[in-house]
Length: 225
Image (tube, rainbow, N blue to C red; front, side, top):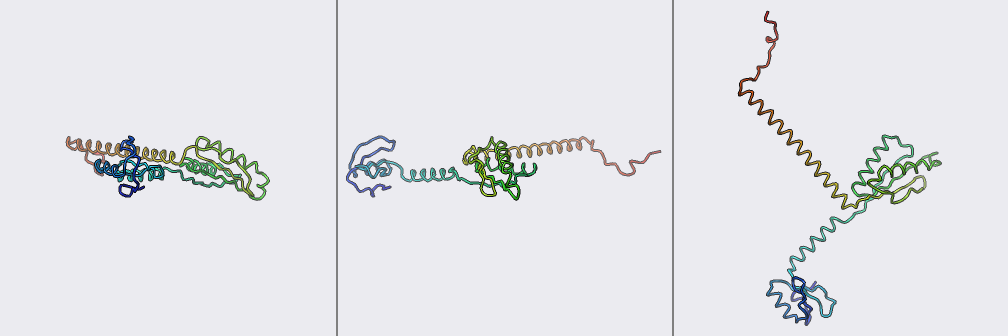
């Protein structure tokens, strides 16, 4: 973008700092108006005839543009595909563990590639893998959907699950959950400190009142008779 004296055309279509149309003016007059307003003359449409220029604070404009670009990069969706491998005859405990990983991936906004690995005679029973994939998809249906239906790929059967929430939305939820857990921990610690302080105050009050009992020794347990 050309600014101020770098704009070398006879005349420009000038736009005021608040977007108002000033009209076509000579470049000398546009530069004078910019100087009087303590602003910059910035060329915003170089291909127009005459070029369109606007009065603005160019330093502030560059800063705000950089901030928007940084925010856009922070919020852009980075598609990450996680992979989870299962056996068709997986035991219940391992299934729950694997499902927990899939749930965590989907909550984070990532796609999950589920691979069922067949070995030996298991290859003649593809329906076992298909039913397992269907079961997993139903178990995590609140967090994700079947993006790619189960299909045979050599000795494996593959299905892809996609998250319902975008990566940026999932990140917000994760941060909110972290903040909630942190607040709960801080509240518990504060309650424990308050309880200890109350116990200490009660102990001091007992001592001040002279009701603190002397610990019993061996002789105190003897029968006086």
